[in-house]
Structures are given as C-alpha cells and as structure tokens.
Image (cartoon, rainbow, N blue to C red):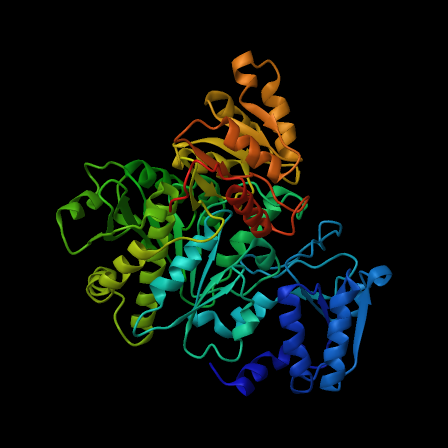
Length: 557
C-alpha cells in the first residue's frame, strides 16, 4: 500500500468523529502530530490536542496548527497531564510511563488481546504510533525486539533485506519514527526495531517477529518486571493470519513467556547452539495442551566454531531429545541445508554472532512469506535451498562488511597502547558481564548511572571473582564500588575507584590500566541522571579518551 488516500482511508474508521490526544512530544509524538494535523479533515477528527510537560514542543505544534488552519488544544506545565477521560483516543509516546496509573481489569475472551486501559479513563483507547503503522504495513514488516541486541540485529537485518529485488527501510526505536515513511514506504520492507515502550499499547503485529532475549530492565517505567516482559511478548500475541516468529532456544526467560502464547497461525524458527538447547526447548512444548504446535516449530542449529548455520528441515514434532535418535543429526551429513557464514570483526563477539544468525533466519522467514504469498508451496527445505542459492552471496557480504553501531561494543581505537571500547548502550548488569566476557583484553571497566532499582548482585559477584579495575560513576557505580570495597584486601582496594564524572573516570583509567590492556565503558545503567541519553554519554567518553590520550601512545584504528 503506497497511496496516501488509501492509507488515510484505512485509518478513517479508527479516528472519525473522535477526540484525539497526542500524549508526549518527543520524536515520535512530533511525527504523529504532523500526520494528524496534515490529515485532520480527511480523518474527520472531532478535536485534536497535544500534551507535554515541556511547553516548548506544545507551542511548536500550536504554530503548525495555525498554518494548517485547524484548532488544537494544548496541555503543558501546570496543566500536564490532562484529564484523559475527556478523550476517545490517546496516542501515547514511548517516553510516557503509566506506572502511576492503575489499569482497568480486563474482561476479554480467551486468546483475544486488547491494549490495557486506565481506571481513571476506562472508555479511552490508548494506542501508539507503532500500532497504527503495523495496522497498515503488517504484511511488509520484519520487527525486532528484546532487552539487548535489538539495535544491532535490526541494523544488520536492514542490510540483509536490502538487496536487488527487495529494498528495505530502517525504522522504529533505532531513531527513525515509523510515521516518517507512512506515505512513501511503497513496496519496501520495513526493518522495524521496537522497544518495550512502543509495544506496551500495541495490538497489531508484524509478518515476521524476532525476539532476542528478556532480562530485567526498565523497572522505573512499569508497575513490575512481568509487565515489562509481557509488553515485549505483545509482538507475537495476536497474529493477523500467518506469522513467522524467530526465537533463540537458549534464552529460557524468553521461552517461558513466548511459547505459551504461540498460536496455530505461527511458524516458529528456533536457533539451537547444541543438543542441550533442543532438549530444553522440548520441555516447554511437552507441557503445552496444544501439541499440534510442534508441527510448525522448526529447528536451526549454529556452530560458532565452524560458523555453520544448518536448517534441519523438520519440525519439532519429529525431533528427539536424544542426539543419537534425532533426525536433526542425520541432516549434518547433507550439504544443501548448511550455510557457512563469515563475520566481520565487530560480529566475532559470540552474542553478537548469535544475534546476527537470528537476523539471517528472519530474512529467510520473510523470503518464505514472499514466495508463498506469490503462489509457491510451503516446502521449507526446498525454500531454504533456493534461499541459499539466491541470497547466500549477499548474506555473506553483509555479515563480513558489517562495522557495527556506535556505542554498541564499538572499538574506538588504541590510545597509549590501550584498546578502547565504547559500550554506552549497556544499561543492565548482565550486558556488562557479557561485554567483559567478550573482550578479555579489557581489564578496566567504567560503569554506573541512574539507579532504577535493578539487582546488581550478579555483576558484583562477577567483578569479585575476576581481577578487573572498576571505576564507578554516580550513582550506581559509586554504590557498587563501595560494596566491592567492603571486606576487600589491600590489593583489591587498589582496583576499586569512584569518579565524580567522565573526565575523572578516563583519567583514572589511563593511570591504572596496565600497558596493552583495554579500557571499556559499559555502564550497566541508564544515563539520564547525568546525560540526555546513552549516545551523549558514549560521545563524552570517546571525547575524553581522545583528549586525555597519552602523548607517548599514537592512536591506531
């Protein structure tokens, strides 16, 4: 669908005659306002209002509204937030938290799904820009979510999907509002990164859905941790017809919540690293009352040592937990099902390599959908063989040339003999552990940021068990280093430091890091207590690394 009139007509019934509020005027909120202001009359809205705590973006919207010749109400400063019950529909921006509101109890039929409503406004529908985009472009969207790895995975997916016969667009949480392409997406496939905040009130989904993992995060935004997890699961909760779902079989926290909501319309591709992953996956299906779901669950295996991705071609129904009895083992002797991959230096880190493989699987899923929608048969082994023949060269080229994203285990350079890595995107403890494990040459870590109530016990234990220099930034970094210092020996105390800001942290890092060893920024916390976002924090780190670089050590890349 690429016609403006057709798209507006598709949304007309949802908005005609309604009082609409755009709640929050960040990047997405502003794009939403531009859409509704420009199409106010065609959508036949009764009223349009905007609300943001900051009066400045509200004033900008009012100025635009005057140019469009429409009346818009504004709620900011002391008038923020407005009484939501006065609106029929609220378009909530991702940054707005409903933690201070109580949700209305749901009374829906089994297997149905609707967005939550608030007790203070039970008749008001709350939705978001992503939900509207997916209502229009579900059939040509490959969506990615997860606690960690979604930005790199989506970026790589964008390159994998973008080939001679199929152009793609990179949209969503990665920085480009979905509505920026609402009228000109044409036949391009959308590689759409989705945060939990974007999925919280989303009821539509994508044709292909990839979930990377689920870890504790964003406790400041939700009533509880399970609510955060379930917002991610919304991506696969209510498929519109056939849907392809990509899941890692080694992420228990994710499987525990994803497998029970799967439906008969979904074809699920699981990535297994070994036979233990397959046996573990079987356990989740064995307790399901709907055993027929095994017929549409397919197994991919990946050898990190050989860089071989293998599609077994059979469903979970025909897999055995015992490797000697399993049909999966027989496929290892064949050649048609193997795809030997090559990875750039950035993707050699194991968890990034695995996320890359998930992106390849999602690309294959979209390939299958296009072939089947075009009248082809649903013979997955044959489609995999065709996919390799047509796409393998392009896939290998994308993986080999991918340079990664800024702030995501980004190699900054070598300064004064120290290799330096910027992992400012790291906002949870487990991600910092993974970064240190992936970069054994790094012996100094700078960490800390906004305290959102996360449990740092696992990171504390990890740092206690290894000889890392730990430099803590306010607030969580100071708390963690103080805990590490309790009962520490004199030698251990020489490894734990507190810095008041990034400049002091980098200065300490250069002083205490042994020659040839690396320096890593992996904060394990959000940035908002000091910086606008993690990007600003990462750039501050890189700037200080370069500014304070030892004169005796030339920079290398």
